[in-house]
Amino acid sequence: MDRNKVPWVVGLLIFGFIALAVSFWLEKRARRERDSMVRIGQVERNYGTVFLFRPGSDQKKKVTQLDFLSPLDSVQTDEQSEARIALENNAVVRILPESLVTFERVELNDGFQDVLVLQRGDIHVEDGGREGEFFVAKNGQRVPGTHYHETNLSKEPIEKPVSLEIRANETSQGLSDDEINNLVGTQRGNFMKCYTKLLQKEPEAKGDLSLNFTIETSGRVGSIEVSAPRLQDDEFRKCISSVLNRVQFRTFTGAAISTYFPLKFE
Figure 1 (tube, rainbow, N blue to C red):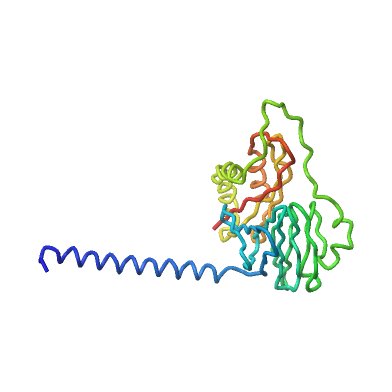
Figure 2: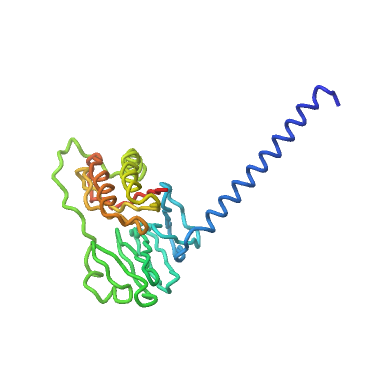
């Protein structure tokens, strides 16, 4: 071998070993992060196209057969799809077509409660699970999953904000997920300012947060629900809601939109 080529060969071998080591380390880290996620149950696609949203990610994940659920995950079905949820507390729920739900885990002194937040559409509770460990939240109210279908809440439609009158030359059809995510994403700096204020009071504060909100056809944000089991400070939640409430979307026609945006603070 030409002596002038030896350094090049050695360099390529070293580069290859480094690349393999980095790849192995990244895969190991990703596997460790997946294993460290709290699993509260699993979602199964009954039929059609079912999407899963993870906290901290703006991307939809298509559920092919089975996938695990963690706190603040959201499941979405379209008009020709249905999903089945099985939680570790033995609760079993069918997510009916054209629905969107988010799962919360509320930590208690002697255990925890899992809460299904119904944002759009409807559900059918096949099994309410262990007493006191599963609840359904809808329209700002919360009831035990074991008695959900016995309550008036199960028969109530999802509350939507009253739409304001719109001038015809300002309207266009709907808002895409990308359009919503991009506009809310421009406020990450302001969300972080809320978090910085929280850290001044609670230096160890961290956790995932889910913004569940509606958008009126006028482009204004309507109802807002902040889901953050590990971030319970009232001033922090009000600050986050205030930032989101200042976002102005373009006007559109059709029904008001119920949607979700995840945030991670650490």
